[in-house]
Length: 269
Image 1 (cartoon, rainbow, N blue to C red):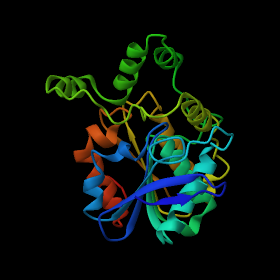
Image 2: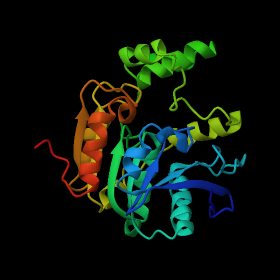
Image 3: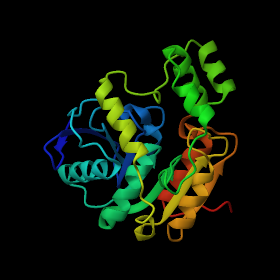
Image 4: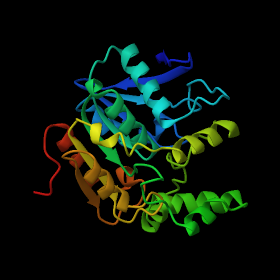
């Protein structure tokens, strides 16, 4: 599989699937391209999908240096596009990937055809942050309990129970298990320091903001903030969904996103 090289020389691994116009899929914090595994086939049926291993994850380089930031990740994505010979693409970023996508669209408008921002925020200074009870649950000393808390922030209890009853206990959105601790810390700081508020009005691409209505990991109120700040953007909430709406509620979310990417306006009607 191909590797691009970021401006600082770090190898950035990516994968191409499908055929047609390019669609870049950007994953969440501390996750590799495998974040998209449950749904990438549906997108690759319509587009040439580009999935990326963030620096520190998957098969990309893992520098232990101060080179991790959401704006820097956007530069890594540009390096991937250049290496793959892609001039302009549709972009769908979720969670931290949505933060990266904000910079990609604002700093490199010529590279972004249409933009979808999923379960993300403009950053702490102007966004709505998760509550202290969520932070405490994730910071538990008991690793198994902290993992369970994260799982329940991602998915509804019923969906988790159905999967576990079927013996499916692996979930692809809980972090790349191969990441070294220093890389996890650098991802956490990169996402926490994100602030694209002043850049959002520069986004020229048609934009759809998607969020689970019951997301408290990245509170759903951020969807309206982003849609109000980005010119002519629309926001859509997925009823009952938590942070990983794109997986659990794929039957609703994927057609919505595909319709928008294909030229629909993202409205309810």
